[in-house]
Image 1 (cartoon, rainbow, N blue to C red):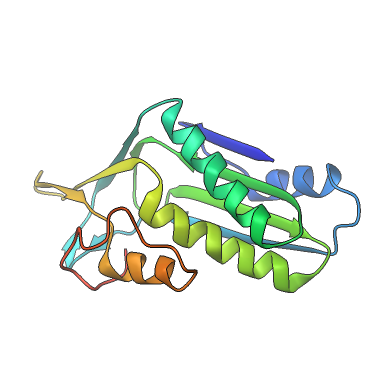
Image 2: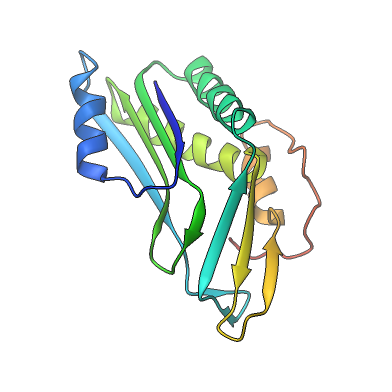
Length: 165
């Protein structure tokens, strides 16, 4: 298991190679990379700043990873989440999951992202080109995605918007 919260960018190829090298019997690796969009709720975004509580955030990510391992026979999991000031198209998050078979890898990767979007303690502030700022809450659709796994979000109902984040 690898869980990191960091300022620096990450390299998908290097992360997947490390995940595969550390685990015998890998037949499938599924991965997801989230990036900063240049538009949010119809407004242009010039930067996004992500904040977190060191220590607490890593523990929350480890809990999410443990929940995935409890559901599927996983051989390895890597979660890397960036914090700090990011620009459009910058990578924010990487989830990579290794298992013997693709079904478990795909499902666990999606589960981890759904769980992370609603429950991980990150705070996102978007800044528009004219300097206006907006804190980004979990979306109704994020909470709905988590419910399909049988988990009720702690943040359920925190945003009226039904758009994807």
